Image (cartoon, rainbow, N blue to C red):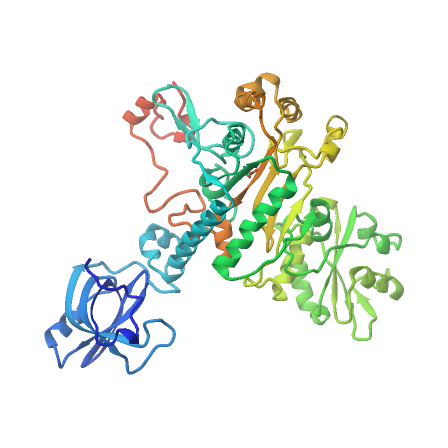
Length: 593
Ligand code: ASP
């Protein structure tokens, strides 16, 4: 080994030891007679001292070291006169007696510091330098710890890690597939898995009860905020279980992760139906760190001649604690905020509960003091609270109110990243109607079973069939979702028919699964957690980006290796793909020959 210790482990106990350290030059301070240099590796930072009086040559050499040079130093661990209590090595320094430059470095394009001056693009292009920064390195370390804890916990519960293939078959359900041309089977393509869903179900048919995998999944979607085309799931499946068993098992996993990694006890997870989540939070992934429940004011406001409310399908309100002191200017600004296209409300009505308990609203003309007292009662608004009201079409207004609730929660400081509020959302609808395609879509996926008591509605009222499906939500983030599956061929076939598959299509696409169901498929179910997302949540970050070593940018590009990239004509020919005409867009003109 070139080193005896890392840059993160020496302390007063090592005083007097002769040591060798290796690392990168972080920062240097030249104080005339002395040069102090911080040496960094992934374990930490250790201060080096070069003394002009005792070794002028060495000190001269040290002064010439540039940022990010890689060096090996030998020296004696010595107690520091001015200590730094913020770092574990802050009480000592190394009086250097030997200095070897292992490699030089060009001046890095951004500073390798906690807060860098590098913009996103530059950081991604030089990601290997970005990862040298403490926050990114810590994010990756946390991810490693989370993966290890996940494996320990699942193994202790008897789960078996099985790898499933990455080159599979394209299917029309779900998101768009990434495809890979097959050289040996001209004109045919593999697809990369959006998830190992069908394989894990086949493993259950195969008797491999309690499967898990920490697995890469691929979805070719237009990148919405904080999505990556390739991401990682903790994918799990088990047999001979009902929904309750599954929820208990995986609640156990998440409880273990919180305990092991963060030292936090999250207790038992409450359960909330999809219907209640939509009603009270306007959202199927409620942030339950704060209440501020959404209330329906229809009964209180209709019939008083205020046209906006008379014409509205729903009138929804929240009470914002202590916000009655909001100025006119603040309320105007909030009104502009809800009118932004992303929120989509047409206006904002407000009412303040005064210190004396009376209520003053922006629509006092239409409502008597008694009416307004009724609003306050429904919203459970107390003195000095502010009531905010949105009205309009049901779906849009609920969504806008959900956004407004979250915004007010943030403004009031109620969304503290160090507080974790986890729950299960259950009883999702099985299907949702898609106006664009004019057909039903599986809300979770086509393998999800309907609740037995709702199965009879499949023919008559499919929109009202509830599924044995559930999501785990933490702080308003959907961290995982799953379902009890269909394990009966006829029901699966019926499901495909409901989703608009012809019999032939269903057999071509999913015949392998339906056939398997005829060979003793056990009742089974499972879940997949978004691993990147849980890591980001544990790390207190909004973005999953830094919890992935080499992420793609918003256009799905890896700007470091410059991918995707065109293929050479020879490669295309070999794959049996027509070569694009010069000057045409490759995606538009390539075709299989
Ligand atoms: N495969 C599903 C998904 O990726 C999760 C599951 O149902 O287990 O969302």
